[in-house]
Image (cartoon, rainbow, N blue to C red; front, side):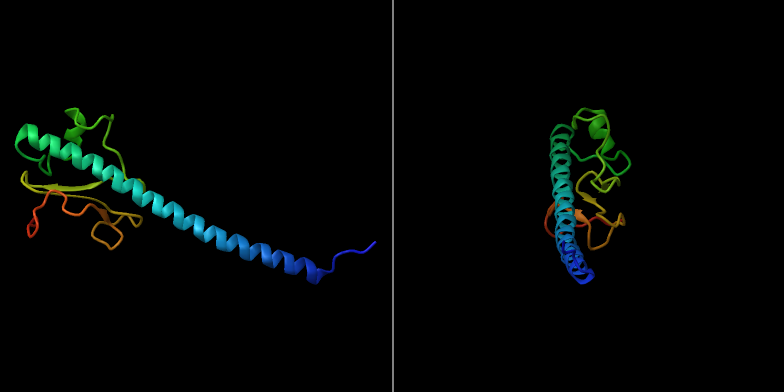
Length: 131
């Protein structure tokens, strides 16, 4: 009977390790892209509720009212405002005329490069909120 040598076993373990490493990296990237797509879908849902609120009330909810008023008044069909896929609250600022709505992204810090937002969320081109 012939057994495997230590070198043969090490080569097989090395090849398996490389394959697991390559596949693992791609799976992690896939999950991050899926979370970003989920955040964009939730932002779209909230944005549609904001537009319906504006049509019925003549303005967007203010920052003080927040997007929780969308749940309270039945514009969002949920028991509470959804959290983003990373477990943080969505960032919402509004003076009643324009609004900013975004997720702080994987690092959970607003105003960084990985923030997820929808282009043109409530603001007309060239407008910005000053606080």
